[in-house]
Picture 1 (tube, rainbow, N blue to C red):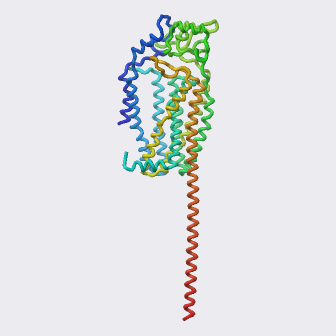
Picture 2: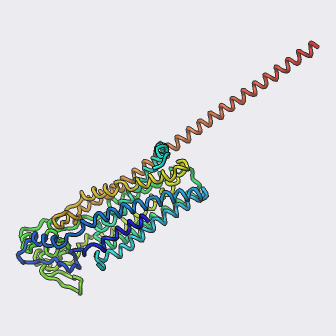
Picture 3: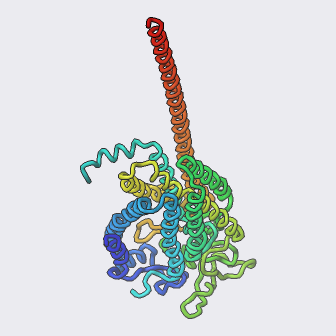
Length: 482
């Protein structure tokens, strides 16, 4: 009920707020072509801001909805996992947990696929207990639990970055639409992770791995995923040629766009016939447009790059950066990375369930799922923001980034992904070493106990023989006296 209320509040602003004011290729508000009237961009911006002061009142509703969604959604996983582990056969438990995790992943996959269709349209389609401290201390003193949870937190941070920013990464890096980017994530990356989760559960069930062998399996799986992830750093596209950013325009071109009274808030990118991208038709000096019903086919009479070498028209949308052939190997490597890393998912949960006391399982899993949601998206957002070259503005407020340094974007986003995977590898490896040390200590203690038992048994035999000899000698003396 709480989670349902959270989802309802997240959807509520669509119905209670006003219409979304946008400028884009299909916008009827403002086409973005060059206007030669004498009105300053600042005056035009102030007029729009006074007419459309929306958004700030619905932000608290979004926050409350996310809070309720988190409160209602988190208990489902720890309690469900504990229930399956308590009532299923120990051999079958990993398989059932693998199915649970895989089905959990199917939801986001369908979400991305649905968002791929929805993103083709603009926004407005229509309009505490008594024993608690003891449990905490007992759980946090378990080194295997702490290491496995830290490993899972690192991998969850990697997944959070993929789910939150991979769509933007594909969109900016390979010059694709947001619809296409979400289709790639929902159709390739998430199903690969789902298959990895199920495969990990099947392997665990078939081989009947111990906790130590499970730690070794997680270590190997994460290490192999790192080997597939590192080449991704070199698969990307250079920053496209953009006027006023990495293409230094002549003084005449700058004067051309200044004469058009272009608003600094306007962002409706067009690709000139000279291969240079402009922030809007206005910035390209385009004074006319060719439409087919509600869709703009071309912008014409673009004086800012008119010359004898190039015709004076511009196409709607960003310029192609000429490296579409790199998207396929990128998606193949990233999906393999997701598959191999996901092999550790079910296995690591079984390690937690087998190393904490049965009555502490729900609490331990609850702490784990709480840590999953800490800081990761914030770290990704801060790192990606440092790669921004041009920020958008609306009503004198900075909005989203319009243009990135794509090399910096790729290195920082994927670098963080690899950093978190490496963190998971280190934690799994340390858990394996701790379990190995515990195993060797147990074997040594068992050997010493057996040796002590053997010595005690030998001493008992010797004592019995001495008693037997003593009794025999006494009997002999008695017979002689008689």
